[in-house]
Image (cartoon, rainbow, N blue to C red):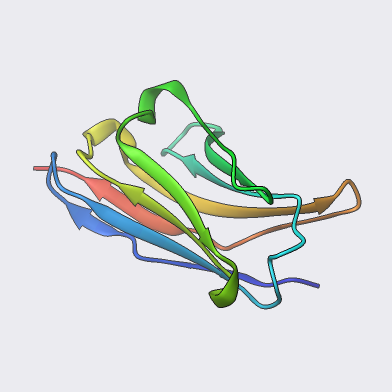
Length: 116
């Protein structure tokens, strides 16, 4: 069993930045990939960004150029640097770890609110 703990959420104004962290209870070195998702009120959970074990990344179109996903294997942590935040970025952000088709885990989420 792998526990994931997200942190770093909060209330910010449009144009400001936040950095989210997702710390795993075990080494992430061999994880196939780790991802961030978000869920706005009344909407489905949507993919935001993904980083593979080799370091390649993938983003949803609406965050390209503003968000950066990275990983620190020594700290068992994945980050999501979010710049130039917009109100439509508001939601609960979840971390997902994919090890195999039989082993994937989700964190409890951290709230991000972008509002003036």
